[in-house]
Length: 407
Image 1 (spheres, one colour):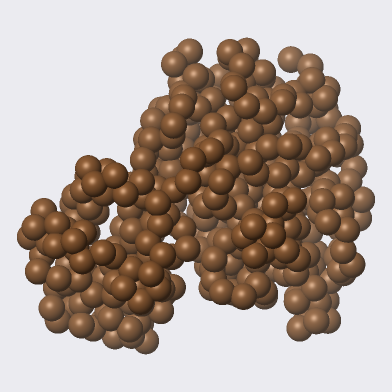
Image 2 (image 1 turned 30 degrees about the vertical axis):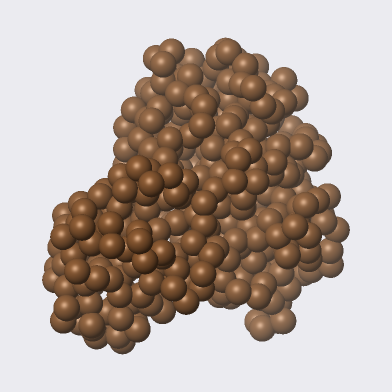
């Protein structure tokens, strides 16, 4: 029986999407601009030999031909292409749900006011339902900046730090020890219920715990938790799970899918730990399994923080782990690498960018296959459905037969 492994390189866009003008993202290109910046600063070409063999560079050049220095050579073993998003937003749930066969074709709710993000009426209801008198923050902000600004006052007063961004999110930062992790989770659960009751249509409430005693040493921990709404239809994960398939979530995948269609949940902090957990599951997971990993740190630590050098170094470090992943696979395993949106660290602001994403696939007996342009991320979900003989998804075109995979 076959197994599928999906690795989401969170935010690794490869060129502005056809509808990027609507989002103000024309000319955004996460990967190419990282490579350019890295070369300009270090005078060294970004070195991604293993991703290049799988076809990442070729996919990037096909999506948006640009000049940049790289080291790695031509694709030699793997299928490569690039996909556009049809969901209305460029957020994490939309990207993941679409790649699982369920695009988001409605508009999310947003807190658009930059300075007083949350309506006064909502804040009063939050105070009532949670028993807290007030909040700190109440604005659009970077997660690291806002804990540096309000962390000491938060410790002193016990008030949660609440903020948002251009995404459909209500984020709550609180100290793991002074506020308490369980209290933070409970607060977020209560806010999630209230937002749903009031029909705000907010995609995620995110618990953002941190530790430290002063602005210079405040640091977010790996105990983040996302409280998402359910996808608007059954995803390929739901179908696979219902037919007896084993779905392993590594990282924040379970949170993104509101824990629906998930058999097993594994948490890990940092790219290396997430890759380690993935490799362990490849070595131990039973047949008829789907191992689904999100490498959040590309987005969280480098994209949003506008750190192209850190992003380039993290990509190069990840590239060196690919042989380990491949070596752990059996002859019946299929590996997919993709992304959920862009987050160009050279782009103005600190938000996601509307971009094409890479679609790479590998198994031990594959040649070099050009998958070309894919009209929707949902092509991946349709391919998974095809691979496991599930009923067809409503969106997407399978490329399974193009992969020359002989069971």
